[in-house]
Image 1 (cartoon, rainbow, N blue to C red):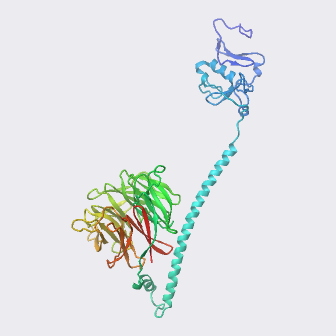
Image 2: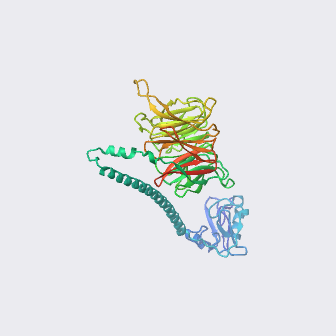
Image 3: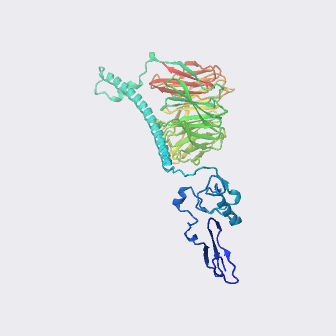
Length: 553
């Protein structure tokens, strides 16, 4: 007979069907020979609570889920836990694991466990804190902080746009007053065309009031040297000069130093690249996005609003130059060390959309300049001018990502830089000294386009020299020069180039070819950048350590 007084069929040995629970009451299951299960217990066993706690009981966190008795802070029934985190009295969970043997599992989550997983806890009282509302408030606070940062960024952009529009409004008001003065003069009646008045306003140039550059201030960019290229951000009114990190142990690599043109003070360093930066460029969108190229095989887009890199493109080769497409701000160009030019779409972050292969040798692309479309009747097409030591090539943008190459008739073997003046369709080509011509030469060339003779022949793009400027006999560095509109008048153009032999800047008048002035720089000039701020014209020159500012007066 079994322990309840009932007899068990002969030949059928009772077996334990479930785990044995050691509590104040003895409860276990027996399997009869016919496969049916009978629960054998004392009279109070049927009224005992089930093994699993309800969801509400679990929330109490004060009783053992095996014996339903409160755990203690000491003794045999002290608080303990398994690796899964569920809590029990020590004696209960120890007997539970021992009773199940090697296949022991947690009574709560059914995860595998063993005796060594039992951990004693030292706690006087245990209660789960409901922090749902706190977490919700944290998420709301983070969302508010994000919206506030976004609003501050938009506010800064609006303030900058307001400043730009205020300057433009002041300039237009000044022009309006001058036009009214012209209209009030005798002989200038309503019958005369307004075009003639505008022409007389913008094209007049008083020879007695020709200005010149005057030294304004010198700004230390890098004490250890290593500066290379320079660019101007018009929306933020600041110059950007490349330099190695001032704290190489903390922030290695290279970046740019911000120099405010309002107070002519260096204000901030922005880390961007791992190796030396070789190119900086801005677009015409006034969004303060800086395009940079470096020898670490990348070009990057950096937001000067937040001083963070927002996009990185891996080129696979060291990058020597870069520029924006002025006809479509979605495209940027990277000139590589193998002579190729990669075209990137800023909307596609995966890879480049086009590769422009070199037509001659694979010299590094030292300079890239974009000529916007339809800026001149004699040269209406837009495209990219890529310059290398082997010469130059104009990649005419036919449509989208289709380009047609035109080799420019330049001297081979000595071209160090090509800069473009988009409005006048001129380009400034710099040649290093050679045996036949022992001085540095800057040749101003005019771009032209040969009309299409027949349907089978494509129109060709070329250039021809209009003026040559000579400097010193030394050119050991790949420096960048500048060609731009003169602050003295709408019709004149200035050419600026660094002279390594005398550590100075040569300023020529492009029309007459005469040297206007020579600005002292103390060290070889690496880059030159003209800019305008607060209705004043300035010229910035970058050496290895210093940035010098000159004002037009």
